[in-house]
Amino acid sequence: MGIFNREMSAAFVSGGVALLYMFIIYKAGDLTIIHYIVALVLVIISFPLSVAFLFKELSLEVLVDKDAGLITFNKHGIVGSTVLTKQLSDLDRVRVNHLEFKMSNPDGVEFVKKIALGHGTVIPGFGVSEHMYAVECLFRSEPHENVIIYSSESVEDAQKLTDEMENYIKQEGKSAKETGH
Image (cartoon, rainbow, N blue to C red; front, side, top):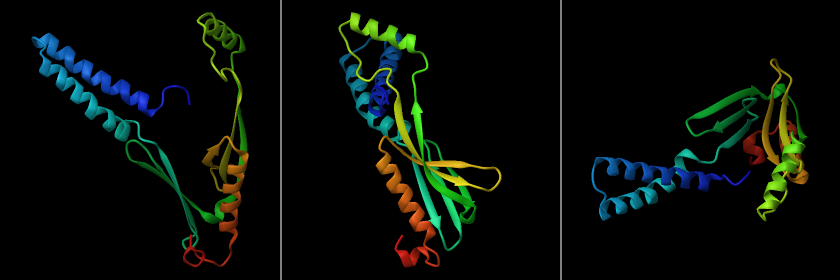
């Protein structure tokens, strides 16, 4: 994830809004205490708005409609949504896929570690490979699409979701109303 999370990014935006306001006022005339108060209010207002609208968490909704024979993926983004609908009969399987993210430049990692040590700082986990477990829906229809619906650092969590989805989908002859899902 790194150090730039939603809140830090929103803090940068709200600080930038206040600095832009102060710069415009400075160029237009004299700065007074009122302008500093307005800048503070701009920070207080723009921070939560940035978190809520600019840096909101993206979400993926998966709807399995056994009655209609459809599986719908709805990705809610910052602006609008993306919807992918597939036939449930085209779903080949749901699986856990192991993904490993390795460092691509080991010399660069060692160089950065030396610089950090020279400044008396240690970066925990820097340069270490990361392992992720993604739950994928694999479709057999053309074009072949793999839709990742979940990812975790825990293989147990990913396997649990995979098993739950497969069990729900394989329940023949029961509609969503009858199973309570």
